[in-house]
Image (cartoon, rainbow, N blue to C red; front, side):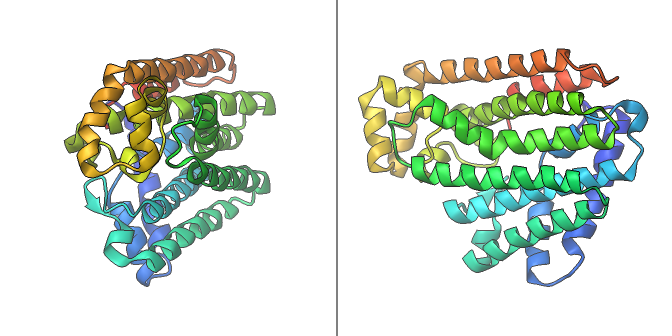
Length: 316
C-alpha cells in the first residue's frame, strides 16, 4: 500500500470499512468467523483493480466502493472454502476458519460471504453488474472442480493448468476490472478490453503466486514452502518439473510427504521449471500490457501498468 497514491489508499480504506460492516451485519458465529478472515488482511488487489479501471474523474461514486467490497467478499469466500478443502491450518500466518472452527463452520462462513457479496452489489440496482460477478463465481466453481480432477496428476498439461487458473483467478480479476469500467461510465468496447487485460493480469498473478510456493520466503508469504506439493495441487513449476524429472513426477503421483518437500523443490528448480514458469508469468504480464495499450477511456494507464508489474515482481 505504501506505493499507492493517497486517493488509492483512501478508496481501499472506504472498501475496508464497508467490508467490516458487510461481514458483521448479521452477527453470530459465521460473522465472527468471517471477521477472522477479514482480520488476516490481504493485498485488496481486486478492489484496487475496480478503482483503477474507472476513469479518475468518475472515482468518487459509492458504486465503485460497493463493487470493490463485493469482489473482495467473493475472494474471501473462496479462501475460506479453499482452506477447508485443503485442510490448511494457516492463512497469512494465522489459523484458518477451518482450523479454528471446523468444517461445518468454514463451509457456512464461505457461503455467508458469497451471500453478503451479492447483497452488497444488488444495492446498486445494476443487474448487469450482478450478472458479471455471478458469471465469475460460476467460473470459480468450475475451476475448483478442475483443480480437484487434476490433483496428484503429474500428466496435467500446462494448457490444462492455465485453463484452471483462468477460471479460478482470471475471471474474478476480469469481473473486478469490468465492474470498475461499468460504474466508471466506460463504453462496452472498453469494458471488454478491460476484461481481457485483467484476465491476463490474473494469470500472471496466479503463476507468480504458485512460484512463491516453490521458492518464496515463508516469513513473507505466511505459509510453508511446498504447500501445493503436499496437498496435491499441480502448479506450473511442478508440471514442468515433472515433465523433465521422473522423480518429481513420482512424488506428485504417490503424494508427497513432509520430508519430500525440500528435495523435490530442489529438483524442480534444477530442471529449469521455476525459471520457465517465471517466463510464462512474464508473458501473460506482457499480454496484459498489450490489452492495456488498446484502451482509450481516459484511464490511468501508468497505475494499471504498475499493478501488472507488482503482480509478478513480488515476494508475498
